[in-house]
Structures are given as structure tokens and as C-alpha cells.
Length: 161
Image (cartoon, rainbow, N blue to C red; front, top):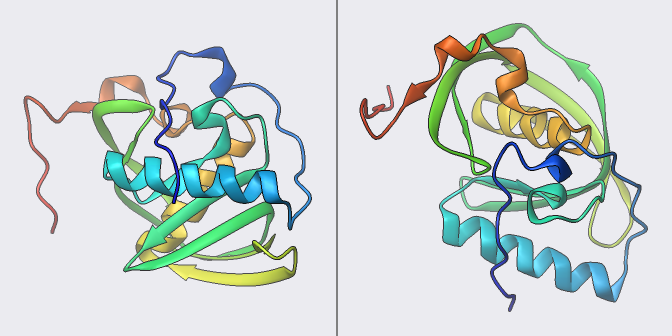
């Protein structure tokens, strides 16, 4: 299957480092993708970008509503109206904030077989696409907010809805 990897925690500099394009399909990247999926699931996340485990690659895995999506070299094609919702990050544990992002997004990305495909996301999926694409550009969600808006979930549990 895959081997869980250590998730880098902010302010680790590798989270902000430039990433390079990937060329799919690739056996080595297939193993990395398997490791990323196992790591994401073990940590209870819905997305994980390669830089979060120290790999400076334009590659991320996303799992929303049971659908696993691999995106390599993603690019945003179109965004819709903005929406504000809670957001967290495996690289910033125990902290969340209300973040403004597009409620709908269309991206293109290479799939695990190297085909350039179009993805449309709304709601949580749109948010995760944007969050992971930001990681590939060295941005974290905390760059989009005033840090005073961070909520410590150990002190103030956030309940959906």
C-alpha cells in the first residue's frame, strides 16, 4: 500500500520552497502517491501536498466524500463567487480559521496516468483544491487571514454546521 510519512509543521522552510513539475506516470511517483494517501488518511486529512512531506513537487492527493483524486501540475481555469468557511491544515495542527475562497472552481491537472484532465469542485472540494494548489506555490492558508483570527481547536472545538 504505502508508508506513512512525517508531515512537516509550519514554520518549516520546505513548506515555502519552490516546487517543480512532475511527469506522470512514473513508478517512483506512484510509490510517493501511495505514501501520501496513507499519510493523509492516517492524519485524518482530506488533502495532502507533496511539500508537506518534504517533496518539492507539484503533486497533491485529495479525498472528499470517498473520492480520491490525484492532481499533478494543477492550474486554476476558473473560479466562482467567494465563500467563507472554516479551514485547517495538517501542517498547522490544532488551529483553524474562517478563510475566504471561491465556492466553485475549475482546474486542470495531470492524473496518475499523465492525462491532462479537468476537475470541477464546489463547496469543500473547491476549498481543498485551492488549499492544496496554494501549498504547491509555497502558500499556507494562514497567509490569507489575520493571524489573530486563528482558533485553537484544543480550547474551542469547532462543530460543523
